[in-house]
Each structure stands twice: as C-alpha cells, then as structure tokens.
Length: 237
Image 1: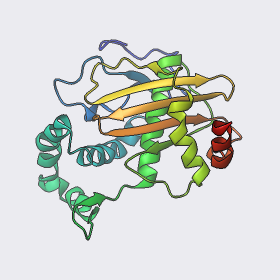
Image 2: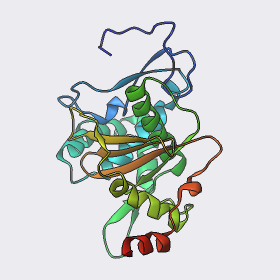
Image 3: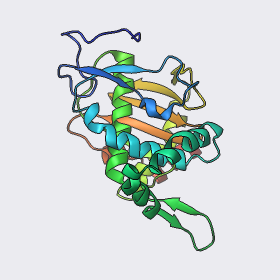
C-alpha cells in the first residue's frame, strides 16, 4: 500500500475482519527512527485493533528499546525520543512506572519487569498483521509467542522445547520477509498445511528473537508440545 492509499468500503481489519477505518504499521512505526522507515509494512485496521492499542504500543516500545542496549539504532531512539519524552512533566507518571519496573540483580546488572498481558497483545498484533500482509486475509483462532527476552513460566517444558525446535524443523521452508529496515526489524515465515499453522520468526534490533505461531480454533499451545524423550530417541535411530 502506498502512502496515499485511502480506506475503501471493502477493506477489512487485519485482526477481526470487520470494516477497517485506518492503516496500522506492522510492527508499530514508533520502533523505527527517522532514516529507518523505508517501505514499512501497513495493513488495514479497525479502531479497536489500532488506535485503542496505542498505549500498549508505546509501553512495549520502551521495553524493547531498553532491552536492546547493544543496538546503536535502539540507543539513538531511546536518547532522542523516549528519554526526552519521559522527562516532560505530563509524562512524570510513566517515568516513575518505568523506574519501578527496573530491578537490580544482587550480582550486578539488572532486568526489566514486562507486563505479560501487554507483551501477548503486542506480539499477537504483529503476528496477525504479518499474516494479513502476506495472505491478504485474517485468520481465526489464537496466537502464541516465545520471546528470548521474556520467560513464560505458564508453559510446560514440552511446549518450550517445541518452540526451540521450530526453526530447525522447518529449516528448508522458511520464506524471507525481505524487510527494508533490518537493523530495526526483520522476519521469516512459513505456513504448514498439515498443521494449519502460520509460523513466523521475528528479529527486533538484531537483539530479540520472537517466535510466533497461529493456533487453530479448538486447540491450544499445549496441543503442539513435543515429547523430548521421544524426539531424542528418533534422532538416535
């Protein structure tokens, strides 16, 4: 879609399939500093799945950038946008909240506490947006993701093992997303006809790998767990 595109009556939301009212960038445009916005991905969206998620977009941008200190692009965006933004009087509450969620380790260094609900919604939006951009339709069902910067302790060991094996399992099938701003975001994907699932591996600031999958209606993530012992036995045969 070009910059001058306008919403048409037949345009549908990338997430729910309802009438679209605007365009949404995938991932959100606020991750991309000036000079790194070449041919950003855009999809059509309803208000609920675009404007109503703007606060989550901003909070997750802060989390991703603060956790990407090895990226020169992320550091530049933090200094020029985020640091100046939270220093404004009207953003005082946000700044305090960010500080309260930075936890120090006894041995030195630290980590950031990330709201799990925010991260699930944020990455679900990107997974659904990429699928819509590729296949020009939305999918029903749910999504799940595994982020190397966030441990989801609610998943079984088998489900975690499944995530780790996805990239190798489909090593010959991945399709390159051909992103133009790889220093900020890149991805590769694959649709498995047998399992009826969309798989995507996303890279943010060349620091964070996020594996996303679609889950058909009537199933959940645990349906796709691999038994580690059986897998290792198969490899040995």
